[in-house]
Amino acid sequence: MIRAAPHWPSLRGGLLALLAAALFGVSMPLVQHFGARLGAFTAAALLYAGAAVVGALSRQRVDQEARLKRSDMPRLLSMAALGAVLGPVAMVWGLQHTSGTGASLMLTLEALFTALLARWLYQETMDRRVWCAMLLLLAGGVALVVDQGQAGGNQLWGLLAVLLATAAWGADNTLSRALAERDPGQVVLGKALLGASATTILALAFGDPLPSIGAALALLAVGATGYGLSLRFYLLAQRAFGAARTGSVFAFAPFIGAALAIALGDRSGSWAMAAGGALMALGVVLHLAESHGHEHQHEAVEHEHAHSHDDEHHNHNHTRAQMPAGTHSHLHLHEPLAHLHPHVPDLHHRHEH
Image 1 (cartoon, rainbow, N blue to C red):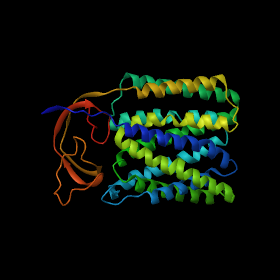
Image 2: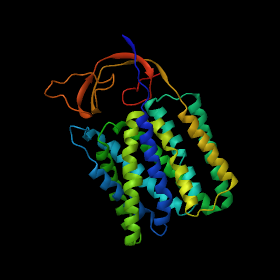
Image 3: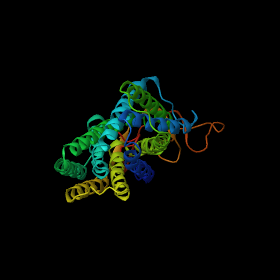
Image 4: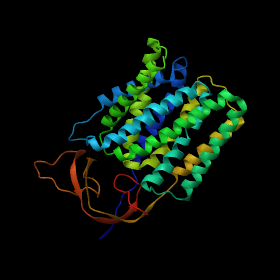
């Protein structure tokens, strides 16, 4: 039976992604400021140690959020290697060798890597506007590379290190899509502990100098908010939005970071940098303008994740004594369903086109 569902893509997902973007965007110039005299491994270890605290404090009860499974460990290890070791180490080193404004804007390309990988691995839908948006993001990134190349070799190598960080985080974002239905606090804790442990070992092995108490506390705080809380909100946004769209909203983070870098005294801007930023901003706006809706079929599926009973996708029954209040988590069965409504590739709309 075909039913027209009065369902619109969740505004909650977009707001969560924007909140994650704001927290991460603010963190970038702060990492550059407080981590200027530290080794990249030490700075990354402190950032993810702070994130681990947030993960530990934000874990939910088993009846509210689904737990990680043993089969999730290879993916979690890959996320930690890319997103909690390679990404932050490359970013910290890059921030030490290039301008905060240029580095912040370069991180907009994270949305490009995320969208391409989401299309390749999960077949997430993307219309012509999305492809045009990605070309604009790419053009803006090229403008930044050319601008920093003219500024000198160190500036260019720093920017390329930030580019490596964006690629690592793009892959990390795409891998995390499959864990979006798990408890985000547990995912943050696992990823952060693995990342902090690995970078601590590397810091000791390479003889990184010990940080001052002030710098250590500052980076722990930045890690708690800009990495721990940001990742938690990012995972919740992916649950509602899918990887590509969450990445596109998250692309606002670099503009927040660039604005703060300028407010903190970074005067390295140029017309080429402004042009690159404008192209990237246009790409982000165009990416968000996508609209997608058609008649589609939901196949029968059984899975476990946090849900409520106020949508058309969770019509299973509970006994009166077991009926939970609000959002809850348990293994449940979805019956086949066909309907028509605007949608995004969230947990229940990952059908092929």
